Picture: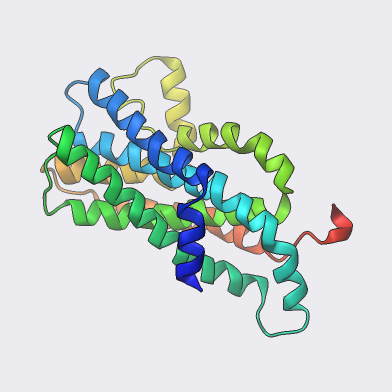
Length: 237
């Protein structure tokens, strides 16, 4: 069943555009305009763009299309909608791993990206963030109809990207960057960037950043998880 879903998603044009072509384009752009930035920060941003596109465009649309069936099924079986979320997270992990490997293959073969052992830690952090954005995508799919998602997908992706792009680390400054940085502190992507910067700059990772990453992740997920219980039905449409 999981393999069938994976094949269906990979063949989806939305998946190819938002999660394969777009992150590669972003990586190429940032690689050519940014100097002196930790390469793995640029690599992580590109993978993030793919993960966000997968979660908030492709995944949310798929959930919105299928949720009425699973909601109906949950009334007659022990298979609850929350079980469907957990099942889908395994599919999302596989897809996000694919995104990571595709961007990595592009970066190493064409842009001289160096693969180091620390990349394993970055991969694990990115997969955790993939779970975070997948839960957001699931909630969007549960609460918003497919036609509205088609309209909102791109703005939502841009807004989500703003929470993970470390403008200060990319050389930005000024009052706007300060405000954005303060807003980013309420999302786990901010602390991910600090951890990765330390990881690949040969500096000691601040335990405070790790603790805040975990804490903010949990605090963000809890209210989203409880929103899953309120599923759209045919009457809501």
